[in-house]
Length: 304
Length: 131
Ligand SMILES: [Zn+2]
Image (cartoon, rainbow over all chains, first blue to last red; front, top):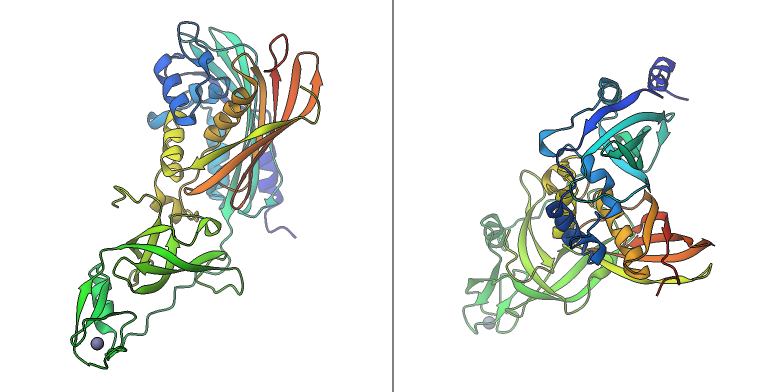
């Protein structure tokens, strides 16, 4: 049962066959610097893309037609109208799903790019993992010096993100007399470790007395932030509302020798390994909750 | 080159730098490809790779494997699981069809959460075949 009116469906269908771009012009002619920047980004060392006989990587086809920060030229009223209609219907997000390119002739530095595009199809309402929306397919003819150089078929999904329930908040820490100093430290982006006033042992988590000598006197030292994964588990089930399984829970051994349970971030859950170096960072989860987490990778000059 | 031949896999480390560099090199300034905070506001856990970069990597994979004389004729890709920073994408390919000097290669790019890209590449091979 669709709650979308037949009227909207008909209005969307009516865009099929209309122009999406008319007499668009590439902002720059095909040029060596853009080719080189592309090849650097892709790690593409193909010699065909350098030197006096260079061609542009064929997969750059669409790049020559991009509007960049200053926006598109040649985009038709119809395309903007279609996107606006979908926006108004609540399908405000967009993601590219398909790209099909045919290369008729290579592009070379100096080629002036022009293009025309047509709205090939607007799908019926579809429900995907991302949410519900409509696929919009456009086909673009890209010309160089007026001659067809390639065709570019592009499909986007304009959708309303699947929300389900509003995201639950992470559980609040239980703060008491014995651990209040730790949470005050976190509030100042410091990870504080207790140090026994009697024997000097470091301890974590916070406790009222020393496990080694029983002494009740203590002060704190601030963790340097360096550490490594001592052990970890990957949580798949059961899901908890504020968390998004699967995720890795690490037992982090700090450089000071004590261990702390925390999230390992900056690396997919299945790439966490025992011994992996990690670095402390403070992550804000909502307006009142900041937690120490540990970032893998980027061990030098990471900063934030 | 024969139908069923497998191309050697190519591992791509999906770094934040690659995602941003690819987006800028393709002149794609959509915030979800460079601004993690705005990406999160739009429901994505982080920035993610744009389709133009994926397309470029698929093209690179084919010419890396088949040599600089191989000529790309057609690249058709479909995106699935997004490429987020910190992941690794492994591109694999298998020859699906050979007709004269033209081959069609099926390409899959798998990351830690699924298939990022599936597609086919049609390529013309130099006389004498690929090395
Ligand atoms: Zn003690």
